[in-house]
Figure 1 (cartoon, rainbow, N blue to C red):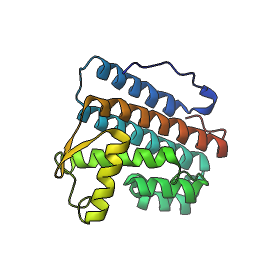
Figure 2 (cartoon, one colour; figure 1 turned 90 degrees about the vertical axis):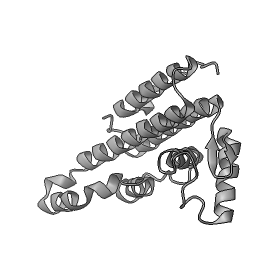
Figure 3 (cartoon, rainbow, N blue to C red; figure 1 turned 135 degrees about the vertical axis):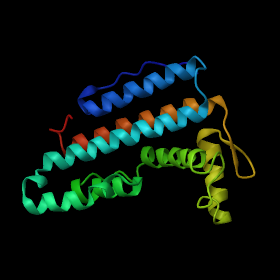
Figure 4 (spheres, one colour; figure 1 turned 60 degrees about the vertical axis):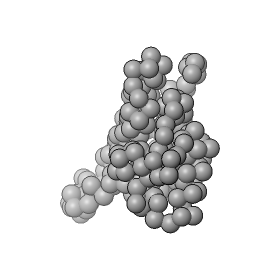
Amino acid sequence: MVWRCAIIDFFFLTVSGERCLAKLADVALLVSDDDISPEWAVVSCTRSVEDHANQLLASLIESSGVDAHPFGAALLSGGQDDFYRTWDSRLAWLRDGFQIVVAGDREVQEFMLLVELRNALIHGNGELTRAQASRLDKMLNLRRRLTKLLGVEFDGRHVILSSQVADKSIALARAVVLHLDSAVLKVHPGLRV
């Protein structure tokens, strides 16, 4: 795939978002040189975006000042790991704690499909996990969506990735970073961390 330079308005990016996009650009260079497998690209992209989302949450929590009060500090010390445990919890805290509602947005939904693929690669050893295959209708829908959006093929539950999956993974990760940062900065324009 030929990577085209896109004009990015850095006004709508956090510093963490800029760093994440730089990591994704590094992954793209490795993919274009055939230096990495599609599996590695999927895992690297999802990990980079998760790190960025965690940094956004941490920055929002810090800027809120909630930890300046003993009650807020106690709440944070007891359950802060829950903020970062799953994508559902990250998205819920963005919504409930900071009025940033993105869970249903196309960019986030498409990225969540990339997370499902990563889970199959990591937790299922290259196959759909038991949870992903627990119901036939759910499994067939997931397979259809992975094939349509990312070009993933299947042999039973086994995931087969072509080189195009790496390129599409980078594009989805990049799109969700831009979307998250734009959404965060619309509600919290002073947050540039």
